[in-house]
Image (cartoon, rainbow, N blue to C red; front, side, top):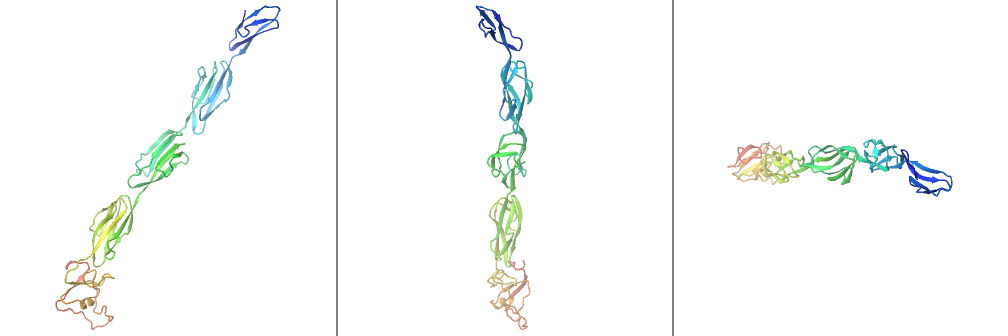
Length: 375
């Protein structure tokens, strides 16, 4: 019977014998020699213990060494792990029986190796400070968030909803490249972005401007200003109605749109709380005529009938008024200078004079807007 016992860190390999010796179970630590017929030599073979350890890289990083390591029992070797761009080393994992000096260090060692096995580097995405905001503040219904810590690759779904009086104008990302659009684009109210670095994404809004058109019911009776007014949401402006001779302002009327007329009966008023585009109408009319009155106004509107039946259609010449009316009339004469030679073509004719017929009466000093004497 032959017996072979390996020393520490060694293991039995096999028996070998010289010529003429017959070995039985040569690969066993306990072997036999049979039918010995000559002198010879028997040798026990031993080899040192070695183990294979493989170093693996998880996704998003690299490791060294890259080749499997042959290591003697109790031996050790160094390992390192480096994350790819926007990733970092997180930890090492290992198979049963393998010991790592520090599983949380990217530069450490596999120690006291007693078996075959493997180690694997685990990588995690970097985290970044991300802020979601709106400009100007309060213009949208979306809440402002941040800064918040988010892992690289995190997707954010965002919706920009303007509050009343504002319109969405687009997203802005600063600094450039810290996020990328994976759904929608800078002009889309609904987007999804992927986080690539620290930065800010803002929903941008601008104030809505409305157009209010101010119009006259009859430009022969009166004019308005402004003709067109640009107004911000919930804003205001002053509207002015200017009557022409012989006419009167009646009222302001909202023809279309959403706004408030502070004083509809005042020719100068404030239009407030404008919430949409629209039209504002100034209503004008002629001053009502009084029966039996002939109206004379040197500054009466041009291109009217000029028949003296109202301030609007007043004679511009007192001489013509007296010549072209029957007796028994009352003449209301607006302030101004009148001459008997008006309309005659002979301004220096001193023989001309005003002549009132029996039953005629004449009142002067009017402003051309009165509806009754004494106003």
